Length: 273
Length: 243
Image (cartoon, rainbow over all chains, first blue to last red; front, side, top):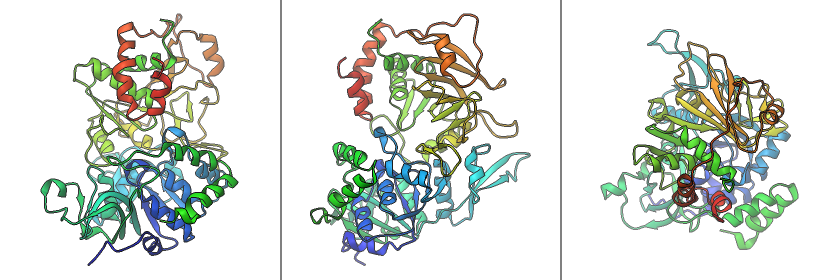
């Protein structure tokens, strides 16, 4: 099976409206080119799962009206401050918020990768998060005595979407130490990946490389995308485009400014991937 | 030591709280705690491990986003830092928003790992530079993570101290109250009372937070400034550029 012939727009077309889509934080490899394509195709009613938080890509999708539900431990834009379109949507009540905490999102994905219905977790008891999460339950340690726990249901995303440094023609994708991407691929029904480069060698052939590689077994499709994580950057390859992100942050603080940003950097022909 | 910047005072004060520990982790968006942990590491002659989230050079995690939490759950992390859009007198922290959830009138980024790490890491240092009655409130609007828990809740961890731009408080888990430990140079007890929304205890005489000595300042401005710049370039440029 050839995985690597997909173009960016084709991947965006295969992520359906209403999909539960797992996305990594800005520092972990974001498929920004596909995010822009999703906005261009007018994706609707997405349920974002931040693993465990989201940054620019979450803010852009929210601002562009692509999101119905946001399940995340946080939305953050690093040193710049809090994400402007997210803040606006939260104040307007225009998206459903499923506020969580990082280890609960990891635990839900771990339950999914194991094919079990839930994962018990320490902490959380006494937090108002629990009061607002109808899908989380209080439980007891069946092996202990008066030892309350929180039970987190499996999180099974329809789609995991992220960007990596390299993939091969069999769909194997090298992630290095970014193991949350492995967890996402294990848990999701379909995994779409963009890669900085598609290499001819088999990434599973060398044990050292294979240790940091998602096997193609878990991968639905890969598309090559040079600078595919721009502007948030890709660890080990290129730094975030701080000036561009600062410009986004300024523009996205107003509705008009955000629309101008989309016109210039998402819809404009010169920006077409 | 009149040329000591407020950030440098805070870095040195927090670093002193980490002396003798084995492993300190620092979350995202935490340049001052991060610099403090790196300072303690530099003085520990290699005894202290630091895991600085967001850094490639100063973290040893290889198992993805979950590793920090698994590590904490196993008791392998001695100290961590949390902040809050609101912090109240019982050390409850709010990282979600002000007003009625979910449509809060002010929205913060979210709870991150607080609803877990606050329970599991023995020495959690609350850090928030802004010390106003807007931040330090009688009661938080939303509890991301509570300061204390009932006896049957597994909780080896919790609040150790609260460090602000004006002072340092210690936290007493039994009394569920903060006690003023020291006031930073240039600030007063009266000013702290006026800008703190919750009631707190204090000794008859409140000491001044010590300013870092020349050797510590040189270390902060040299090696620590370089190390923290990898993760927090804007912070390093602002605080250390002219140093």
